[in-house]
Each structure stands twice: as C-alpha cells, then as structure tokens.
Image (cartoon, rainbow, N blue to C red; front, side, top):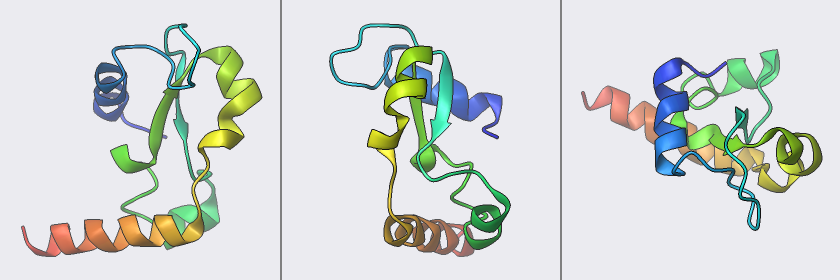
Length: 90
C-alpha cells in the first residue's frame, strides 16, 4: 500500500486528475502498475510501493482500465535495480 506522501506526490504530478487519457475525473485512488502481492513484495521490495509503480486513477478507470497501465516484470526489475543502486550510493 502506498504511503500518504507517495499518494500526494502522484496526485500533484497529475494535477489531481485521472491518468487515463480522455478522462477528466478527479483521482480516486493510487493504483499499483505491478500488482501488490506477496511475491512481488518479496521480489521488488524497493519498487512495489515506490512512486515508479504508482498511477492515480478515478474509480471508473481503476475498475475498467487499470490493466492498460500494467508494467512487465522486466521493467519492475529495471526500477528495482535502479532503486538499489540509489540506496547504496546514499
């Protein structure tokens, strides 16, 4: 689950509107592009609840179109590796 700060950052980046093209509704929820489940939490601990895996959608688009925003495991691995390197360089 995304923390409040991440939810606010996503909303602000999207001017508080749904990310689905052609939709002009306000954001209802912050959606995980890669499913938030036990397996993905284990494989991608830095990425799963990061801003890189987040997108703001209205209720209708979350229900009907969230699949359009899915990312591949390869992309998740790329982001996870990037986040690991950033963490190591702190």
